[in-house]
Structures are given as C-alpha cells and as structure tokens.
Length: 115
Image (cartoon, rainbow, N blue to C red; front, side, top):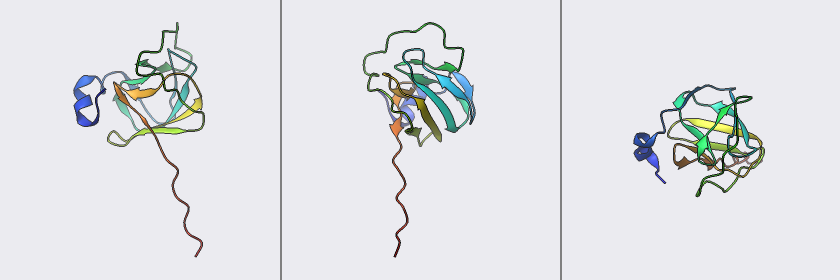
C-alpha cells in the first residue's frame, strides 16, 4: 500500500467527482458514507473497490485482500493531505481508501479545560 504523495501516481485522483453532502455506497460490502469535506476527482474505495453513488452500486464484489478491516458507524475517516473527510452512516466489512491509501479514523477533538 502506498502513502503520502506517492499514492497520487497510483490512482488517487481518478474516479468520480465528489463534493460535500454526496452519499456513497460500497460495491464490496454494506458500508455507506457521506462526504463531509473535500471535492474533486477522487478514487474513493471501500474493500479495495470503487464506491458508487447511493443507489448505483450494482452487483457486489468480494472485499480485496488487505482492505478488510471494516468500517464503524458514526466514525469519520480522513486523508488530511487531500482535505477529504467522510462519515460512515452504515458499517461494513471493507476498509475505506483513496486509491490504495487507507483512510485513517479521525480522532475526537479534546474538550476545552474547565479551569
């Protein structure tokens, strides 16, 4: 798997035009997401296969090796280099990625101190 800008030459920037509010469904599992932040022509995948706009997923394919860690409902996944953030609205068996670069679970922001 690639990371950083090296992944740019491996298909991170070919796929579909995304924009905030767009709903995507996995073609490999039950995962559904909403794009929270980011736009452009990105190769967003789940389970190693391209995601589709909601309602256009078609036939299911098997989750690819190395992309089966799953997604958790309510978690945000991000690629800070691309400015991409998605919110998982339905969990599944596939891992989210842009091209072959896995998206990372975004951690919670710390609360301000009450001092």
